[in-house]
Length: 372
Image (cartoon, rainbow, N blue to C red; front, side):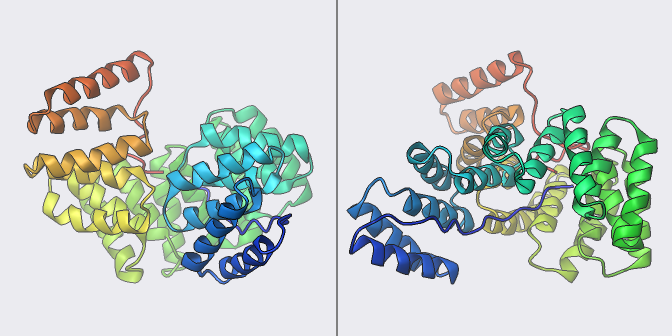
């Protein structure tokens, strides 16, 4: 399961004098009302008066995160943490931002720090277990999730993560027991859906297909099932089935950014570049800090003999995810096609460096980058 998180407003206590306090209070109200442009202006005004105002920096991080400016959000949170290194809200928000980008490696130490400060912080403990499970630290993840389950035995989120961790550990009997409990707690259709997501994440694609088809049989309108089934078919290299499911998802929810991304990606993988580009553009607009749509758009533009456009897109992809070999390789080809030989050699040097370090592209089975 892709861990679904959302940033919350970090209503830190302002220690500013007048008029900074009045501006801060007004900005906080604007942020709570999701009037982001006005809130941003006012928090910036606070910083002009008091450059080391940690609360203003933290709330600017929230605004930047919610408006698709991940790089600026990271900078704001980092500056705020320099001023207030033990602030749990700041640590959580930065960790959640990395988790949203599926960067579990960077997120984990932030959640570890929150747990050090507050060992009973349930959210941080759960998020830490998520990171450990996705990074392969299954023993510690399972121990933490079992402890959390003791306090909340019917929490479907915890049950899902625990079942997923047991599947990754190849302990299918314990996973079945957890999913049986999830069935009792969540009901047949949601439990089948969550089991399908867990099996997908554990690369058990045949089981995932069976679970998700059962979820749709029990509840044809269950949200997200067609997208998840489409992802399974991508992994099984059943392109036509994947396209069908993802088109069904978009028919039901035209604004579904995940469905747009996966549909665009699988069409590009299938060589249907002109069909895939509009879906990827919609995904990029909805998630401007997600690197994978830039990768596939760059690939499509390169194949469509528009290398200059491909360069811009692929440069953005490697900026957002600097450890993807395939993105650097495509960037090198696009730069070479533009006659930018020196830059192409630099990109290929990065490819060799990443391969020497045994770093691999962040891909799901079936070749769709960033599929989780």
